Length: 211
Picture (cartoon, rainbow, N blue to C red):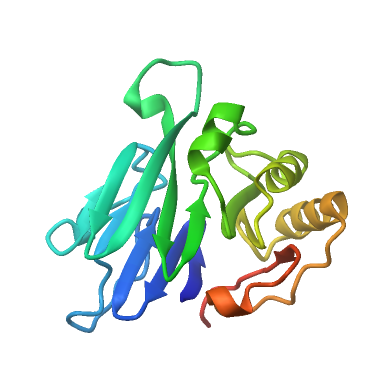
């Protein structure tokens, strides 16, 4: 399995010939080669300024809310968490868990608060956690550290919802790793992981976008 970061909270997971795209931002890169696009595209919340799924609507299955899904052998679950006190679908953030290759990958979307015990139970075991760690309208480094401790993944991939190369992002990520006491990796273009090479203890991986 390969995991790549495309910017903001947009991640592409590749498993064999299958691709899953989480939270594509407006203008996110789109494959120019026929047959190489994602088969599943997820949207954690309804905000056109942050997520745009329309370029893939004719070629991929679009997931836009809670539920259990099985697509081409891929199992995905969407668990709702609040984005505000409003009782509406627009105020909901959907956390997605992808299960394939005997691995579970969790994308927390635009998480605005620490997870409830009910949400943690619904998520189940998490091997790889993609987690916001500051920026616009998400949990900050301290809440991210608390969430990592609660879910106990083998790999945590933090993302700053903004310019990942800016000073604010560097400070937020430094605070996160200080909170959990784990040294982060140097920025790398992708994470290649399998069940057999999962680290025995928590590893924090920093991804960078392709040059």
